[in-house]
Image (cartoon, rainbow over all chains, first blue to last red; front, side):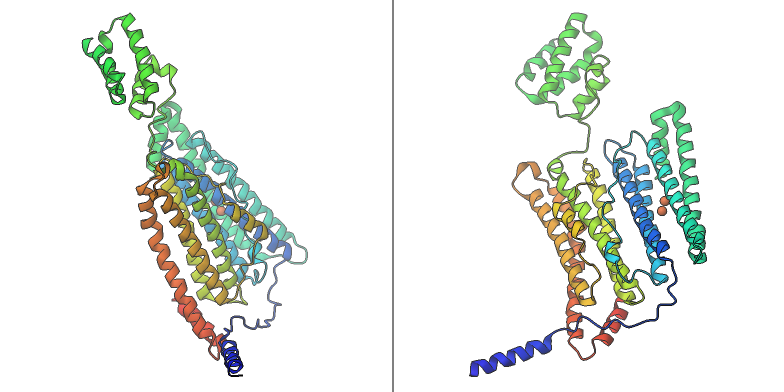
Length: 206
Length: 259
Ligand SMILES: [Fe+2]
Ligand SMILES: [Fe+2]
């Protein structure tokens, strides 16, 4: 009987020690959340596009930092680009959070099938060419989102369209111009001086 | 010529002198008559096969107008030494694991950033963990290439691939999310320990004190502090959540995390 008493006391003690880990989810009005679901879906999938670009640049950075390739300037350029693309993904996530989205289904936002298709490049110029192509395809995707989000007959998402146009497209066009300029300089340097041109240009990027 | 013949004889017994042979060949090349030259080239090729793993030999061959046509490049002039070849796949998986968890923490931060959860402190905590693993991943790639290796972004551990298919929920309550983060960080730290064990173990192929040292200095110390911090958070939360007002406690704790 004494043993049973101790057991009861123990149960009570452990019951009162249970942590209150979960809490009530408050009911908040949601008529301020006005994004079109198609638009939300497209922005969500664009988060993945930015992360895919990040990992593609990561592969470029990894390639050019190899000892037998030894182009530290290009490696730096591409590693920095990888982190920048990740920042773009985070910016889009923050935008969705600001608009009241991402209250559920967050776990599926990032699929890890990000692995880049290309992992080696014959030279720096071909990597720059790939990078420029990658940026152009991202730009096109952003334009497609803009088109579908302002075309919606029931809801023209002025703010999203403005944000994508002002922030994202500006960055795309600036980035593309920069890559194209670099590629041009490199090609001209390599016209007569081949390996020396790439060597010199790489050092300039450091 | 006498010197040359002598060196050749020695080279039959000692690997090290092979390199001397080629060196002297380069020095005397101008003075050797045609028939002798053919013989010397034959000997040199033999010597190259005998100690093929040296950069200098590659260079000598590459610089020689006759040999450079037969032998490809300077493949042995690389940064590889010690256990990198053996440990490279493990280091690649480690880097990919870091990226994988960096994304997990980014999603956990996202969850705390929505208007219903609205916990900027937790959002900041997980975002910080995500950023930190992201740069750890990049640093690991840089390290692999510093040691003459190469990165493979597709080399992902089987259990992570499986996890990707089931995609467990990362939308957790506060206490649970701290617990999850602690487990994740410990697992990464233990993976570094495993790598360290291979690098500092007795197995010759993977023995590499430099890799072990790098892991100690660049990962283990940082991860130790992260683990301690998360353990501290879970202790604080466990005390706060057993009190009378868990909601207020969480609010205050979140304020603390924002600092
Ligand atoms: Fe981007
Ligand atoms: Fe970009």
